[in-house]
Length: 268
Image (tube, rainbow, N blue to C red; front, side, top):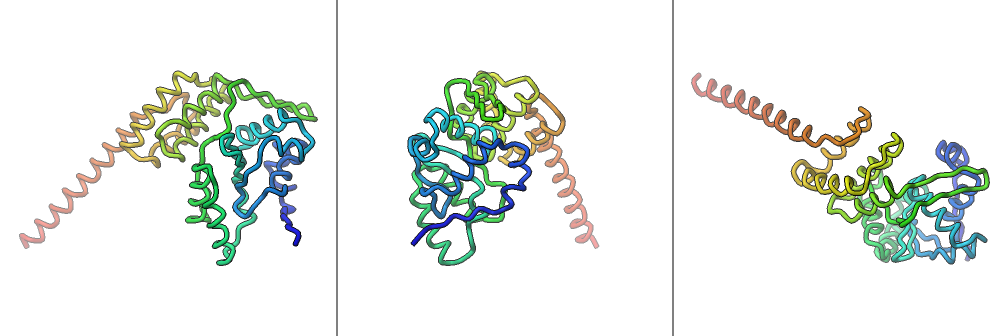
């Protein structure tokens, strides 16, 4: 029996596809969604050599496209170690709530070799309506990557502010959502024309981990988002301590008021 992969017609009207994708990007993305290696989970094993043979591209072109879809479009992850690709949006368009489907899907997810990929999909399975599940970048390169396509659009990821820093963040002890947010911070600095040096990234990651243990991942994520909104060049962790102290003061005042009311009641 033939296997079919459905592609929603909304693909062609999606603002990201219209604004950011080149003709070559569209071809590659459709290939990732419809090639014969795809499965129920949207995470499947495929080597770069296989991609090159099926697409008619060189190995180098496929590697550059993978890097573009990871670092620029942020819609896939690729593991060189296990040769697995994860399509981050696959579940939104291809999963159903059918009990039979979910049962088969759970078995499929359990077979995934890359731990981060498996963990990501397990988290989505537990909370399918959430858009906040994060996963770090897996595909890194040791040199500057320049992607030039048929309409002469060029995207560059510099080693100084991006790829090296991403690898430092990936290998840290921070939680996955915080890692993802730190990577956003590196790209934010690049957009401002002030790339973050790797040495500074190492210090940042160390401090972030300490602060996450103290205040929790949600507080770190909110602080980094505040950094973006205000156009700050750095992440001011001292604000977390100030907020925590402020919260403690409120709690103490609330407790004092409660006990004062209780004593008043007893006196009556």
